[in-house]
Length: 262
Image 1 (cartoon, rainbow, N blue to C red):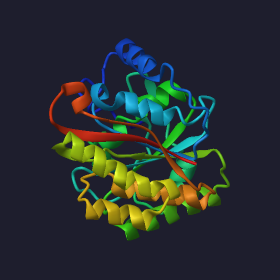
Image 2 (cartoon, rainbow, N blue to C red):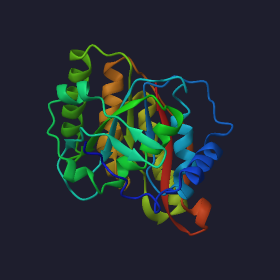
Image 3 (cartoon, one colour):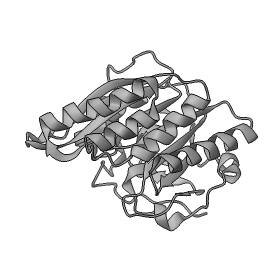
Image 4 (cartoon, rainbow, N blue to C red):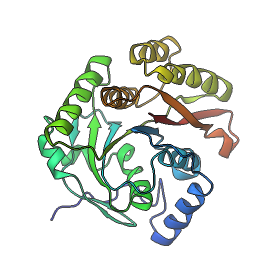
């Protein structure tokens, strides 16, 4: 059986299972906001930089969840939108794909596009640790304009409805501002995120463009918010925000946000 092997273990997160489990345990300690989010936005940088923020995002979903995560992340290498249908390896064990939903999705499978991409991979150990029985549908997003996000959301919702599933949650993988002064990152990122409080996706795109916010996963964020809105979500809540400079002390930073969509 083919398996999507770890590509960035030992770089973005520990390869040793014991070290990884200890780190994730530390990240989740004290983070139980008592929410039941339909979807989340989580960062995908190296765990020392964004792991605490990512844990806040995953904590917005009850630990008892055992359904399927539809996981959408940006293609940093410019590949077109595709899904993966094979199980994914993590140092903590294998995470199975939901083949029923994946087969119902009108999106081409392309395992080669997925094999070296970190935007989805760094999310999977969080899923395996907190939701050991959950499955995933990994979607790598190419074009990220508003129309593409709407089309992807429609295809995802159609697949979920046709499979008659109610045990689905959504994850958008994205960092926010890249390599800008810390004060600028915080101000502009929070300004863009503010549009998500009402899940106003056209306004979100306008704010991102107006402030030139260099978020790498604008499309995944939009697609997840649109899909969640179609299933009854009405608000986005910023749970945590940090920058790489909080760890490194560097004045030029990358921004990370944890958002619950409810």
